[in-house]
Length: 297
Image (cartoon, rainbow, N blue to C red; front, side):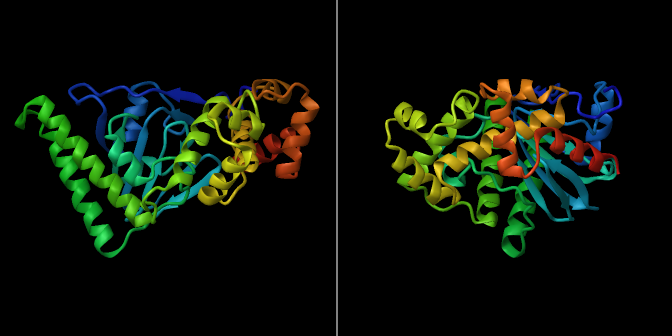
């Protein structure tokens, strides 16, 4: 197994750079490669960061994969990677030109989170803003980069608040460019609570009835909310979350399928195989083998 790439998903916690204010960092894309090497890390490894990343590409396309979706970001494109998503940069990272804004969960105020619609489901595709949206994002990013380096021009508390507001501007502008900043309604709040519960408990139960009992809603209410926000029933939403974690574990770790089944709450490995085959058309072993073959071609 030593020659295989899937040696484990490395959890990447947030660590503030020396001299940087806690909670946010603005980094040139081209510097990520050397920075990773200096810390003894593989710049192209599969990582599960515990923080938000806003990637803005200015020159030259950038290739990366986020949760099994391969992206090519052209100049002018943005991509928002959320905490917990598994990412892997392509071989063109050393030549990348652009900026990555890193910020911790909890850095932005709740009003910004609500207005930007930052709850799942997450948009997977890159965004290529145009017109006023592109100009606003470019100016906002330039201002953020300037203020980030002007650490001594303000008292530290004021400096952090300026950065917090400027990241909020970027997040709200990006939400507007993606069409994701509509005012939340009752279904959105119900789905948000369901989504939080699924993130926490998808290894424990896949039953809509269990989530309904825990949250104080009827199964029908959960399904209506899920359909309104995602286009999927609550059952399908839960199963898709379990399937995503199964794929992550199969491709990014060396665990046997039976161990993956146990981690995801399947009492019998054969039940996990049936679950996986029904939704992907292949077995867990077949998925792993096909993904690794594609990765080496």
